[in-house]
Structure formats: C-alpha cells, structure tokens
Amino acid sequence: MLKNFWYAVEFADRVTTKPARVTVLGQHLALYRTPKGRPVALSDLCVHRGAALSGGWTKDGCIVCPYHGWEYDADGQCTKIPANLPGRSIPKKARVDSYPVQEKYGFVWVFMGDLPEQERPPLPVWPEFDDLKENGGRFRAVTGEFLWKANYERILENGCDIAHAPFVHAGAFGNPERPEVAEYELETPDEWSAFATVDLYPPRPKGIWALLNRNKGDLSNRPPVRTSAGWMLPNMIKLHVRLPIGELIIYDTNIPVDETTTLVKWVALRTFFTGKWADKNAINRTLKIFYEDAEVVNKVRPELLPFDLGAELHIKSDLIAVHYRRRRQELAEKGWLLSEEDSITGDVPRRTATVIASPARRENPELARAWVHKARGEHPTVQAAWDAAQAQAAESEETP
Image (tube, rainbow, N blue to C red; front, side, top):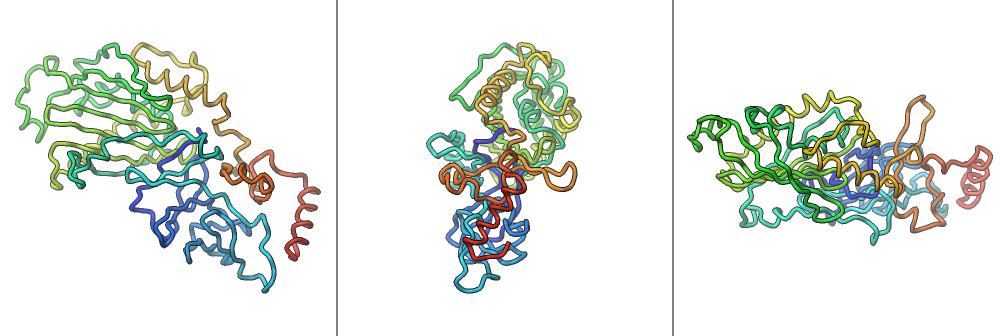
C-alpha cells in the first residue's frame, strides 16, 4: 500500500459535524467538519487512554474524546483536559496526528503521509466535474460504494484490464465472439496516471438498450465502441465508454481498508438518459459490473500483487498493468510503500495498527518524538520511556 498520496476517503455530503470513523491503509481516522464547514481528519486514537475520537462529538470546532472529555483542535493539539486543576499545563505530547484535507469532485481527500506541501503529488484531474448537469452541463451523476474482499491493487489492475470483458462481463458489455485486443499505445498525461484506448465489440443489447439499437444481428458484426480505461495513482480507475447514444464515465476510488479489504466509492456520469428516472437503472448496471468482477477478483491468488515482474506471465494486452507495476517499483524505491516501520504492535499477539506520520512530525522536529503512539522503530527502551515520562510529568506538574 502506498503512502504520501491524496486519498478520496468519503463523499463530501456525508462528512458533518458529527465525527465518523474511516479506515484507509489500515489506519483509523476521525473525520468531521468544524462549524465553519472545514473538513478535518485526525488519527482516531486519544493519546490519554486510547479511546476512539470518532465516538465523541464536536464542540467549538474541536473534537471531544468520549472517554475523559479531552478536546483536540483541528491541528491535533489537545486544548483542554477537564480533569486538570486550574493552572496545570497540558503536556506537549497531548496531541494526535492531523492530516491535510481537501474537498473536490464531491469527495473529501486526505493526504496520508508527511511530505511538505510542495513535494506532494497533486490531486487527479477529473474534468467532467466542471460539466455536471446540476450546474447546467452535460453529465448526470450517480454515486455508490462496494466492498471487496480483495487487495486494492488487484482491483486497480482489473479495472484497467481490457481482455477480461468478453469473459467476466459476457452479455453485459463483453462480447465473447470478439475477445481479441488490438495493440494500443499508452497515454501518460503525467507521471501519476496512464490510460489505454481501444475499440471493444459489445454484445447483443437487452431491455431498453435493445429498443434503441435494433441491430440484433451477428455479435461479430456489431460496430465497435471506443473505450478508454486507466489508473490514477494511488488507487483510482477511470473508465470512459463512448456509446452511440452518448458518453459513460465511471470513476472509482479504491480505498485500501487493509491489505485484503477494499471499499470502493464510485461516481458514474452519463450524457444520455439524464433524467432522474434513469438513475436507478444506472446504479444497478454499475453494481452489476462490480459483482461480476468481485466474483473473480476476490478469489485471485496470491492475494497481493507480486513485486517481481517475472512472477506472473504478461502479454501484449497487459501493457497498462505492467506500466503500473513498474511505477509502483519506482515509488517503493523512494520509500513510499507502507512497511513495518509504519506500524505498531499491541499487547495482543498479531494485533498491529498502522501509524502514518503526519506533516507536523516533520515540520516540528522538537515535537517529532512527542506523540505517544509512535511507529515501529521510534519506541524507546523501557528505561528511556520511564525517564521521558518522569521528565514530562515534572514539566506538566502531573504524576505519571
């Protein structure tokens, strides 16, 4: 799983002043809005006794821990400890990680990493969102989500895989009588994305589509449909189908809950049947695609994508997947791949948790070791931990 990227973690209209837990890259976040509408993402773990901040509430722009009422501002700093007597200071390490947040394309995006702003990869470009029907444009949008029991990279490759359509989606939009994939050239608009465009031969139409297209002859003779599929780092897919009656575009953000569980939040846009009456059909058709894919991808082995390009056999039609794997190797060499250094192990055997350092840890070296919950490799010895606790207690006039 890749850190140091922006992740679209939730639909913007679902983020309110009531805190909610979202999980990405194995790390729990408390997501909420301040009274002024600013979205905030904090590590969902109070530094006092480990309670989930997402179970609390908001008060004057702060999130309140449901266990002992500790209050944290949007930057993750504790601003109030109700049990403190007047005049007692708040310990420096009474803080949680706060992650950069943006709101765009109907999503709340969280930067999962500690890179300074100028070094962060950009958000992807989704140009169709400037042309939505609700704003007088061409595209009607519907949204949804789907839970996979599969690794997000396997899902990402599946979404860009052109050759699987005639078999996994036979009868839906795949034509088993025309399974050949013409050679294509990769389109790489930037270093963070890649797309492939080919002609696909659709199957015989059904239902309302059959009424619009009365050409029910041989499947092999049906006219092709120009189709583009591609990935956008770290976890997004774009499918663009140019149908005779209009355009269909689907964006998927494949949120890695953990290594083998993925929550997909998707947006489907269309320039045809743009009335509300067609929304249910658009949602059902999109979900049908996910169910068909999941039946296969959830059972793929090995569950995780191999690092060695030679570990699985590749052919010419796999060009876009091979390009993704090579790009992932480059990012791994930069240290952007999540590792054991980004996790902690609890007292219970096999119980681990992800701890991704926020930018504040890098921006404030004097506070770099202030967080109670450190990633592996940051833990001091028992004696050093006791000495640090004694010093902190003296500084805050508290008894550890």
